[in-house]
Length: 333
Image (cartoon, rainbow, N blue to C red; front, side):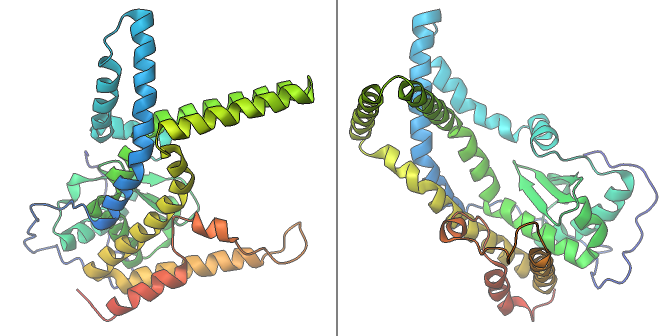
């Protein structure tokens, strides 16, 4: 990306982050993107949804052939090839701006962010210009790794975190890119979109039809429920139970997502940012605990998240993440 013009970046005050890449030769690794076990698990979980999406696309293709005379292979081919656009830089810019609500860093923000990013990528042996830096206008501590080259942080993290802790957050996001978690999730989301859209449409039609028939008579509702049950059983039998996998996929996806977060934490720790990342996690935990203690309109303490909520969480609890970082706390780079 073109670098904004502005005054030279000052050294961050009150910080122990060492800019090791300055004045030294940085050796970039040949392959800085991998495909770890977590990414492979994510890929497997998207297979049933992608298969159902392909079925939906084939049905749409058959309709287009009957209506417009288009070749049957055209819609599936275009759909499969469209995944490459997700890694097209202009398309990524559109995703960052309009889907993730990110902004290009202003000159002063770039002057603050770029040296920290260069330190992280220098330790990893990666050319920092491979990725695009973005900022979200948010007062929450958060960061993002998205598409093929997007790395974003919130303005709160940019303004409030010392450089060493900001570097730890960026190293964590770089770990998602290096492990292949980001592109697998993006492709999985894209290729399962037709199946999800068809499911939402079918569910809306079923709910609307049941409500409509319930206003007529009870026997019409019973007949409709019997018809829906018969069609559902026939569909599950015809597809060898594949739709049933979609019921447990969200829980498995969340479990793999928690594993991906631990892998990204480990990536930051190996680069020497374990103490800083631990500080960030402890600060986030303290902030959430304090927010939970604030008085609310409802009486009583805030309820603990239920079992299903914990199973659907894509991030491990803070205690688990800090515990996994302990073996790296004595390491410095």
